[in-house]
Length: 310
Picture: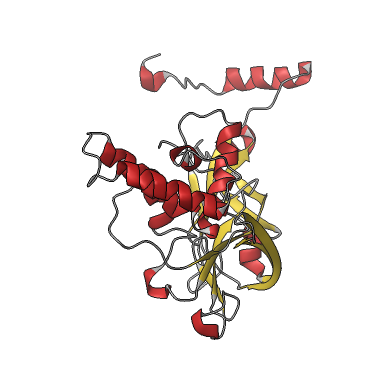
């Protein structure tokens, strides 16, 4: 996906104020409006400046876009992919542009399609959207967390500033990635001075050193010594909370998957844990260890390449 430089599209510097953005848009719109300019490039240019204005005129969108803009400058251009969790800490008021404009994939992906900060049509009046990152063990135990949100606000000079606020959040036991936590009354003020709306937090998991989550199921690679794989038996492996006893069948194969029913994220029903066996050979550093392997080579006739004709 191509990154769109909206400041360049409006021929502006990044520190431009809101009035400067408005003047630049009006001037360029008069110059390139298809009803006025019949050149083949005018319609494309008009669409570019309209898209840029839709983002930069809105303090919320502009603050989020500026974070991506800064990251893109540091990456020296090239193909663009939003980094995971880049919008963490932002909240976005619902609402949006529903006038039928045809904008770029960049705009549609970040600012129109359903996402953690998309403008939800069914909650367009007062809801705010943000993301909260939790650890996988938090989904097992539940608990409390303090979330710091950065809410973009327009300063008197028209620039965008971020105002921080701390919000206590209760993490329910068994929550999965992609679910939402609703915080009544923690959203923006309603139009006309009504009560504040709600804050909707989409949950996503921080990377875990062992586990990968898919819904309520968890996945991991489980290392085994060669003798553990051959002989089988009970071993212990790390769990998201504590540890688990696992029964390895004799003559277990590399890549074999063991299913631990009900040991995944809690719920009704609970998820499962899937452990993929990975046989790891030890590093032989002593003569005694080498003799053991030589003895196995003599006493256990085995050709691992027989299946491929080797």
